[in-house]
Length: 194
Image (cartoon, rainbow, N blue to C red; front, side, top):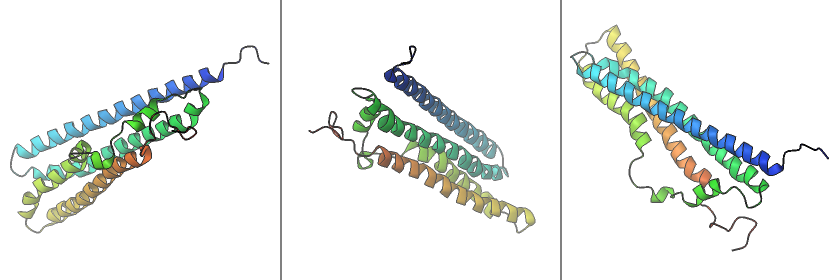
């Protein structure tokens, strides 16, 4: 027998603490991405509204939004995966379980109970759509030229990116409910009888 062997429970708790720290770091990063999104949107809308002929700068927002939404969604999926790992792999290795992820599942609302518009839908694709709508009158007033064709192409690409952003945000919202799913009643795990 190894004299200085670390008990299994200590190893599991150390891994749990490291994974929870990763979740917290990823959530902080996602919050930072949201802050960048709102700052960029505020700056570009201010610039567009500060004078005539500046509405074309809004066409940058769908690209920025798509990139930031993609990173935020990646952080969300990573947090869901870590939570699943904690619940399915770590918790069974500790007598009595770890409980945190199970508690989250048991207290999560179902998608049908969710009321209101998801703030991420407003913060990411909503801002892109608003930028596209805000730039439309300016583009419609342009005479046919190379610049107008480039701007309309950018607008169409922006519309595709706005739709992609909406799909990303909607997918993580619905997948988070599916991955967490309906939780068994507290105290009634798969190996316990009610």
